[in-house]
Amino acid sequence: MQRKRIVVGISGATGIQYGIRALELLRELDVETHVIISKAAELVRNYETDYKHDTIVALADKVYALADVGASIASGSFKTMGMLIAPCSVKTMSEIATGVTGSLLSRAADVTLKERRQLVLLFRETPLHAGHIKTMLQVTEMGGIVMPPVPALYMHPQSIDEMVTHTVARALDLFGFDIDIPRWER
Image (cartoon, rainbow, N blue to C red):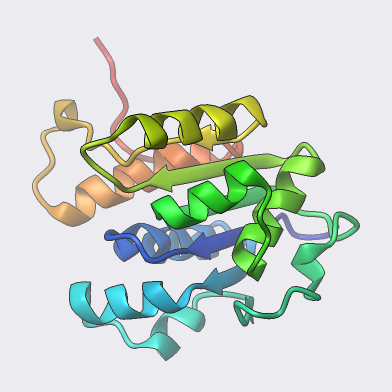
């Protein structure tokens, strides 16, 4: 039986920890991961974490260059469960919403949508102007899910890692994964 397979995009918005944690959780679930990291994400990594590039790519099964638009994940015949972009920048979301596929990151997302697979964007921007909201609507109307990483304070998180893990687990719920996290119960 073939392993479950998912594409993870990491774009240049603040919150690279979301993408890193997604790779860690997917590895624990033995899910095959195919990763694209934007140039801007590499800059953010330097500002926000002590992680080295090699540490992050070691979490993935396959890593692609941003310019490799001929990669397997750019084809609908390459079967995946879908794609998670964590974090997702305004630029990346805008490219997806308009069908601009100038990089492998936006091309893989475009293929995900055209194949009617799950596309989840952990959109990292605030406050929003009308253009952002219209772009989120466009992505949603195309079949994508825009999921701003909003912390669930009802779980009384004790650390940033707990908040990041909870958000990423909720995003992975959308692909049918069940990760043991605190859930709302009343």
